[in-house]
Image (cartoon, rainbow, N blue to C red; front, top):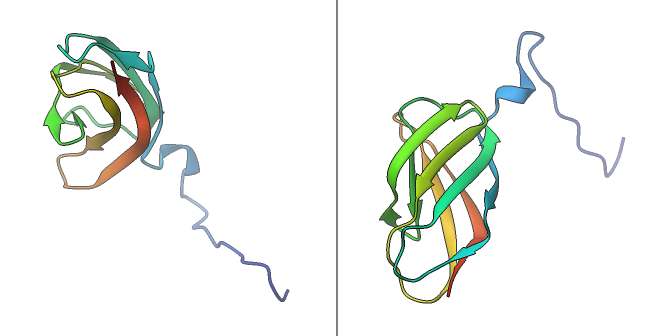
Length: 101
């Protein structure tokens, strides 16, 4: 139909495994770093890394394909982007994911 976009999928494609970053909790923490966060999403792999505005988090644990836990690095005050990167180089961002106060 005109004005509508259709998406075709392979019959064997599992839509739930698509790589996404959906949320970061808690939503804020100290500029000194050290806040334990949980990143929720889809399609996470065991080798995934997490960065806050380019700075690598520590103690990264990929709990399962939908959950990563880690500890925030020290950064200046403000709203930051959370980036999850897979070993194959694919990455996803969650904009405005975490506020350093």
